[in-house]
Length: 409
Image 1: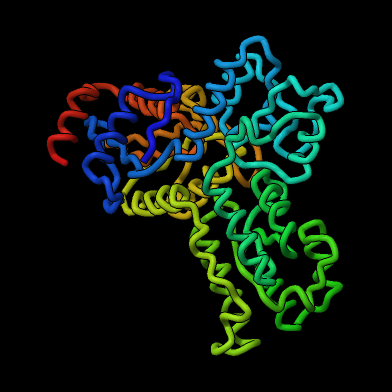
Image 2: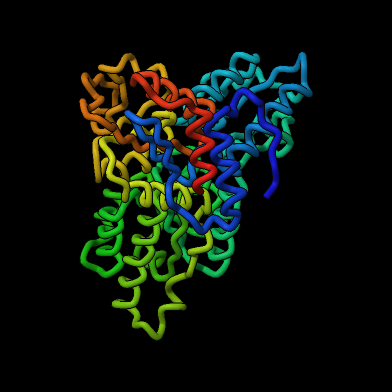
């Protein structure tokens, strides 16, 4: 796989070495057993796969290269390049400006843009409407395009099944940049509708089977379907694709559920005329990170720490997986670990940051699960590990622990 040129300050002295060692030891990614680092009074269980993925590293390389090669020019990010505050803040510090926020609201006056300006398309991609607007200004939207190749793969698959008269069902969050982009690209060649989860899928299934009428479809899926959508006609042939940062297992469950609905309506012998197989659109990095987290949760631990941007969809799903099994603290960086007795973390239900006192249990050995989202730099996770380590006394040295781990693996 390609090696990307990303700034050294995103790499780390501990985490990056562990990742490199595990990659060399298991190049085919068949071993999902976590890394265990035993420091004596605290042990860390670190996911086999976590942190920067191919698409994120590709985006970072392009963005920083664009900045370095265009001194003196005005450079804009269409919106957050990836959902990580450290990466976005560093680009802003270099003079890059945002044109929109993550919800698509304008932050700058587009009428002031000129053909001399540079616009970087984020890893999530963008809509055909925005591409058209940039072209009209004279800005080539493909010149500094960091769209993840796996997002583009979803677009290509949507186009393929659309040309075969299948309607595209998109598993995603309708307000997310990637889903907005996928929706825009999909409706170029087919009708499309967005479902957020399995509960919305069940409602769509009842519409397909005739248990709910058209009016209920239009009311429930308001602003989530393509113009002119006719649920009677357009749900006769369907295929499922996804926002690549969603839970892969949920996407598969949604596809399986809808497939069974179509079998009940049209018969198993006719399923290929009514349901397209789109399993090849699942992002390998999302799948690997989620499977590694599932394996991680087989360890007996006191709590989990998940690191990443609070608006990061893929990180949020790792938090969901962990919260099913044990107490989980979702933090953006090491500064959220205030002291050995307090941690600030994001509550996904309350949608805000909260503080927890006495988060470290008083016991002889504390076991901590540690992972991060696909947009989180290794350096951030490294600082989190070392901040947590500093909360304990009489710990073994990092080099000693790393040497022991590598000798025993």
